[in-house]
Length: 200
Image (cartoon, rainbow, N blue to C red; front, side, top):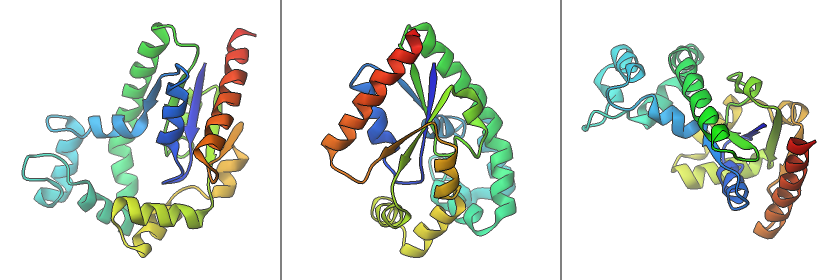
């Protein structure tokens, strides 16, 4: 079984994944895969540099993610172009990682993806788990964590699927506004349910 885990930016997806990992559940992180496909030598990086030039490259030849983010959040058509270059490659590599973990005999695996629904990656999942926090908390956490101003944090949140739509598409929801202990308890209960589902 594959459980897709998603939520808006700064909702705590990685924290939840680590809590499941502590219970013996492996995961594939779509953000990590997204970084893999734009590493130096990868075809996607060559396409991005071909379109935007040197300004999106760091001195070491790697992708300047901040420069790209500024371009695509300012122009919807550029964001769609970037997704057309990266999403098919990301999906192909995610599938390979998931198949490897399943072959290793995990009870179930997580696919942690901020764009689970938007990218169509939810089609790879048997269940979808949404990590939920209010948008005001997302904005505050994003500004603090990513060293962006309030306006850019709001733009990032606004560019994502609305919270109400994400919740409507969820099979399961974790409320990540409480304590670490509260989060751990929610994860443990879902882990129990998921293991039952895989054996039923």
